[in-house]
Length: 84
Image (tube, rainbow, N blue to C red; front, side, top):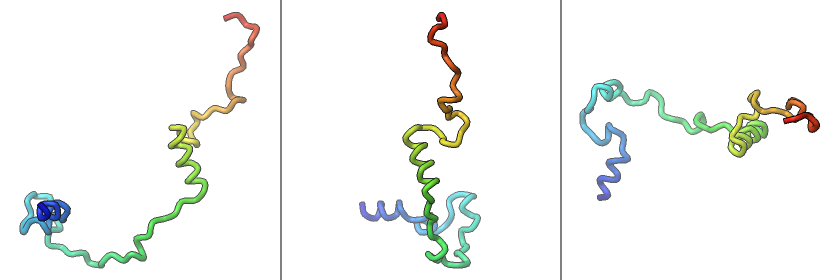
């Protein structure tokens, strides 16, 4: 059972000796030219504005920068004495 789990997580080149599809033929025998350097793979940190926009979108289910966000002053005036 352990070997099946580890083989499922392996990349195709580690699972099989030869490629199984035509799409796998491209780059099958090519090793990376430059090894990955963790110095260049750092993720970017987001600023306060981006964090605010993400939180707004998650809580309100709207984009805070869209034109669909109406202000109270933009709403039409309703006359309480008018007949329905």
